Image (tube, rainbow, N blue to C red; front, side, top):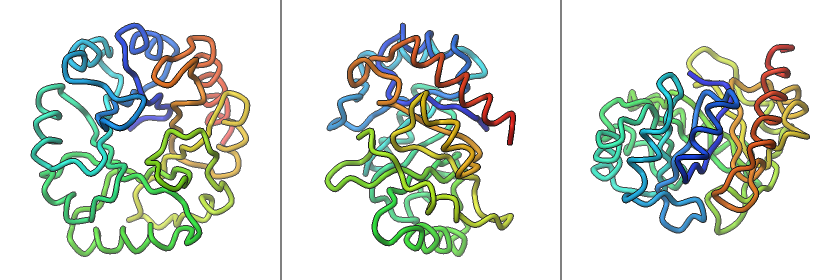
Length: 219
């Protein structure tokens, strides 16, 4: 679906910059408590600035399904990213739209992830992708803290398990090492390529995308 996602796009310029750098997915953050929140009055312009062929991912945290579906339709999103405490049943209410379910690795490791996916399998609503992020109490991602790559590398490889997207503290300097350690299907960063929260640095974005693509090419 995609290989390199840059999340937390808040301006038209950054949407164009990220696409020009070769990222094949962008994240639009609709969590109001986030420093990278994209308000409705600018969301249309930012979404329209994303070129055709670049995947538009809408990030939601504990939003009601009706709100998610309205945003999906209004902005022509391609993937829904659930980054909160949404139970498996919520996926059923999203009417089989592609979902990337995010999990923050805590002290219990992958156990909660696998239990969640088993329940999704029972309900017939497996997500299209699983995103592994770092755990930081009281935060739903975007902290710049690195996820535990050793634990993430143990994610099962059975055919029914959704592909894994690695996030959490990825930067141009460490993304190649992370890909080699975890061997994910894709990588995702926000803070690792920013000047300030929500504002991307064109040079860092280019370096990140290039480093990630080189690393994927050598897998």
